[in-house]
Length: 403
Image 1 (cartoon, helix red, strand yellow):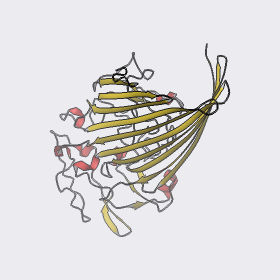
Image 2 (cartoon, rainbow, N blue to C red):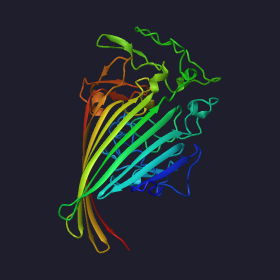
Image 3 (cartoon, rainbow, N blue to C red):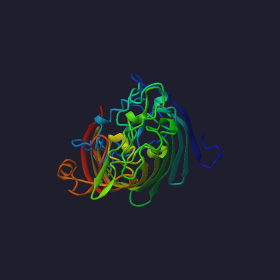
Image 4 (tube, rainbow, N blue to C red):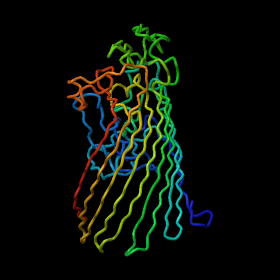
């Protein structure tokens, strides 16, 4: 809608609906951004708080690094997102298989001030229980799961065994040309993402019979609850053993006995401010600061990120300082991008279990102090309860020639 009110305010509108079983193989792949929405951000791409997948097991460090990728994601209708072939300052691609919703994106120019925004509401064609087919076992799915849907973000996962999810994205961007020297480009952005996912929402899918784990130091009875003949989610969410640590007796992790045990609630805020300047006729430079504040409830120790990943439930604060410069010389472009990332993670995994402490083997495998708190999961992986500090520096220097 081009300036319908005659005040310089225009709107872009988009409705989208991508089926759960759709995928683009030979047409639009990661090279094509198929949606108007800005989507999620590249700063959070793998389930763990440090951007690691399968981080509860030794030998699985973060791949892209704590900083993730710069900027927002591009949306692609495939799970072959191929982010492994990109550098940190290039766009990250996220799969949108199963997405349906609407985007409203206004643009308003007032003199030297350019304002733009977005509101997107996303529902999902993959909202289902037991992979959408309760006649099959919970570990017998026709859909690929990849890194699962745990954590702040998981860019290529389109399917989960249980999903009841909705997403709201709201963005305000601004750009202003300051009349200083050759003109200073001042820009900024505020972004909010609210996302909830009840995941399992029907008690017939709970893994065990009511009262199966009585507490008080008593062992669980392991009386499974079948949601169909011969099928139970106990295949995925096994009961904990009883342990005693420093005189405290209880469960090694919380039993999965409530529909709220796997609930997800994401409150995501990004604040960005930057400035750029044309230093010479050929040299342009900019500096950008971004702060991410993310409060995440992503299940508790009963869910434990599908017992495959480091849990990210808690408060995540991340900062990015980005310095960028490029110099053009005919058809050649020379550039440099320096990025400094730092932040903290304060875990909150809920209760209902006995806190354990790292021995020398755990300390060696996971880089935590001996005696530091955490818990061992179903597959023996370790989730630390320590507050964590992260830092990462990155530099890319490049030359491009256009023919």
